Amino acid sequence: AALVLVGLASACASAPPAKPKPNEPTNTIATSGPKLGAQQIEPTKCISGGRYLFLGVDLIDERSGLIVRLVYDPLRDEFVRIFDPKLNETRTLILSRANCKTFKADLTFGDSMVNGIREMKASIDLDCETPGGNFAVGKVASESCL
Image (cartoon, rainbow, N blue to C red; front, side, top):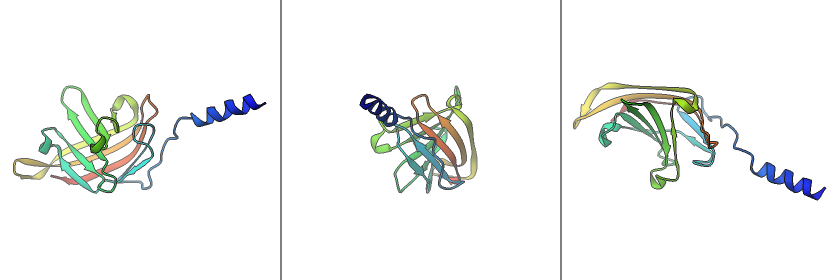
């Protein structure tokens, strides 16, 4: 009987993370899994990817420091990368249509340009699960990314 209890306890300890739910219906992406853990990402700042020489935007949660990056790759498609810039290699999650039930990304040019950087407008709607057991679910948007 003791062996059965030990086996059940270890099975429970290794259960995959549950699919997260955003705290708010908009402007929040919830994550769970080994890459980022349980997070509620609520971007408060948006920067045009033109500053870093890519077509896309960085939506930044200034509280946690996490970044939701939307990148348009003209050869392959859109990608979303959620990452911690301080731990770039270890705390990063890359999402594409291939591992998402919902992957809606919209990126348009705004009306202004400052120092050669075009203003961008972006919206992202995700419901994703990677093969490694990482989840990202929610919607974020910004009307002005410079």
